[in-house]
Amino acid sequence: MQKQFKVAAGISLAGYVVSLITTSFLPEAINLLVPATITFGTILVLQRSSKAIKGTTTNVPISEPAVNTTIASISNATSDTEIQAESDPFWGPIAEYIHVIEETMISEGQKNTVDDEIVEKTLSLLSRVGRLIPQLKELNDANMNHNIQRLIFKDLNGAINPFLKLGGEAKRLNRRLLLTGIKDINSKLTDYVETIEQKDLIELQTRMELIQQRYRSTD
Picture (cartoon, one colour):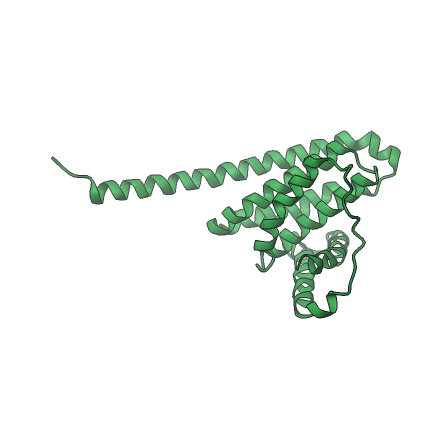
């Protein structure tokens, strides 16, 4: 199963490149669906042709022992969430793109084209989103789902991809700019987490009030 989705990763990344091109003339809401549609379509095709995929290899480099163990643990932490979400028509493309960014950042880190701090903070952010997906699926709030979709496909994609296209010296000079962007995205994610917690608290209080009304004994 994981081999199939690693093969899909390259095609998925192409989808997001296409979305960067179409963003200039398509409305934001429609443009957000471009990478999602391409990714999910690829997933379905690969699922239906699993026998043919068995002989396929990927270009993603194998992790070396020298890679920071923190990076490996963060990547492994999100893999379970990806497996759970990959068959979902809405969350599947998001989980797949999280995996694409993970593989890309780990690869860039191994080639020393991106420094360890950027790699670790990016993977930490992705891991946080991955842990949040089950709660978001349960909450099923359309507005919140759209916000997370935009955070991944529009904001994070828009921060990382232009940076990766820079040359070595340009990356060094602008690394702090990317780190600030990741920090800002992480702060926005904190707002979403607090919103979810607030809704959970309201639900808890409501349920407790109902329990008190039904079962509290009166003197």
